[in-house]
Picture 1 (cartoon, rainbow, N blue to C red):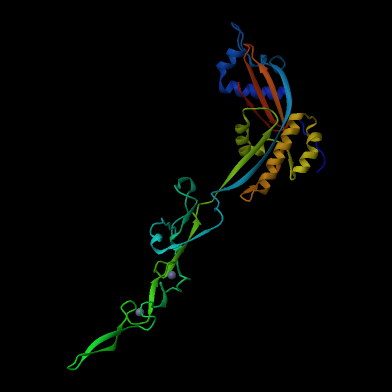
Picture 2: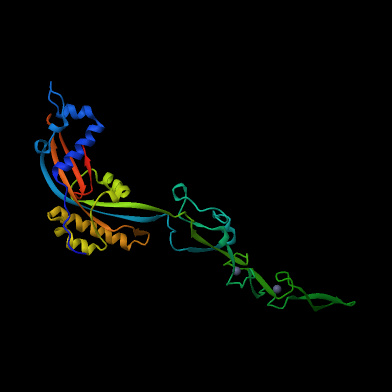
Length: 319
Ligand SMILES: [Zn+2]
Ligand SMILES: [Zn+2]
């Protein structure tokens, strides 16, 4: 791109535009602030030469971005709990439901999701719910061996006869079952995922303006530029580095604030470029900006700002 000096609008043009707008907006106020008692009010008599006390040449940088709002929070979390605990958790389900409007959503961005509940066989007991071990009572024989005293015959000679009966601890099996401590006897553990709520993604256009003039109108200008960018002429750049190197020759003037503003806009631009949810949708515009410090005949101070080139510019004022 060749270096093109942009022509700034001259003060009379800016002042004229402001005058025409102000008279349309509030004629009485104009008459009160600029008129002479007893004389017929004439707009022609209100001149920049008389009422503009000082001017300052500034600059503004503008670009627009698209940002995805309500993007899916990343990552999933998994929890594994004992069976009775699953009913103590609050689960959510979005199956077959439409996406959620983030602004209306009351709750966390990530929630336990009903459809993800899964049983996991307990590793400790291999899903049996119990641990088998040799019965200590019968020493794994399944029988309790005892002696039974029998008195034999007339002389009642005492004789011990072996007598066995099934073990009451292991029910005669020789093995005892102990409830598994890991799963509490429920055979399974239950796992579920804490998943992002399926929010609607809304893409919004956001204007970004940086101006070296310390104006209260930055937000207003930003919004207007977003709507009427074609009606204001600036120098367009595809690359911020390009803007940085050509800003001064393009504007034809320079000051500390402009330098600072460009650097701030540059870091902003860089941040948006790196933001995965943002997308820069326009070229970068550099606008000449003229700040006019004025005073009415009555002594009321006000300011007029112009943004754009001599061909196409817009104005703002606190009058
Ligand atoms: Zn036993
Ligand atoms: Zn177990």
